[in-house]
Image (cartoon, rainbow, N blue to C red; front, side):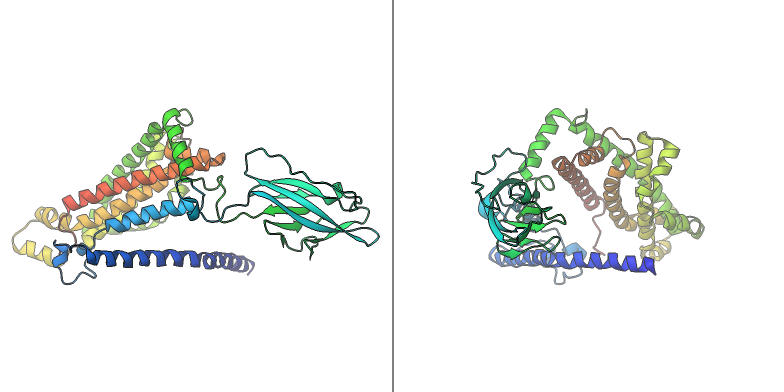
Length: 445
């Protein structure tokens, strides 16, 4: 029951996070629908298409009539970079597009000190908030000669600093003095924060004031750098390299591992899938193995791969081979199972042999499923290469990302993610092109 209670609590936290994210997801969906409506309105003013798809009377549910809309792709990618720039204060966007950023500048707030004799005294704190990583001079303020003395402090943006009024006041907490209000609002240890306009002030359990400037909506550069910062770092690494290897070497090693692992997985998986689809003995033999290994994530196999194959290139390629093998086997088996039996009977009635049926009926009709599986397998291999390069790799995009993450070099991490995505997308586009050339009949009956 205790386990169920813990899991219920975790589920509640997850659902709360989903509920908080729902308005933003809904807003993004509405933005997509708005751009779709705008595009259709503009499209009516343009010359209509005159191609195979435009002549069809029924298009809903017809996969061959659906092609990628170039305008939607361009708007989608541009919007991602615009949102990225908006939430990082990018110099590439005009200032009016930026969401509110962290407060930087001078501000003041007052606090009320209760002296040991019960009298109350007011003091002012001058706060100077500065961008993190820069030097700053504390603001000047006359401390005064009362019981509660005016004070000054500096706080870096996105950070929190503590202020001990007793270090400057006439009485200390040990003598019975305590801060009882901030800007006229009562405050007590662990009682919540008081909004002073530019910051939130709370009190710790020991009576110290904790000052947190307004963080705004923009992300701190250490968590999400601006696009130009990532581009600058890309130029630096392209010129000087990273961890004693050039950028081309890192990407080349990753590409080599992914392609070799994928090709080996396809070379074994496709014949295995055909055998499982054409023979009940082979299906009975391999089906338990394939269905058992398919849900096992490649990460779980890393210890065994190290023990069996060592930490060289062989181990990494084996990991990627296993990531692609089961996907390709299932895709090939599904392709064979999806062949219309009427086509097989027609071929037999025309006197075709089993070899001819395999060559002219089964393979052509299973290719669409195999290409779909290949695209999925390639994506999984790219996702696994980061894990594969954790096995003592000294070169590779995954190694570059993991090393940079240890030192919070977020710009290098994002750069590596973008490069992996661009290369993976390029390979996927190449596979789409190969599918159009080799399987022109897909979706046409």
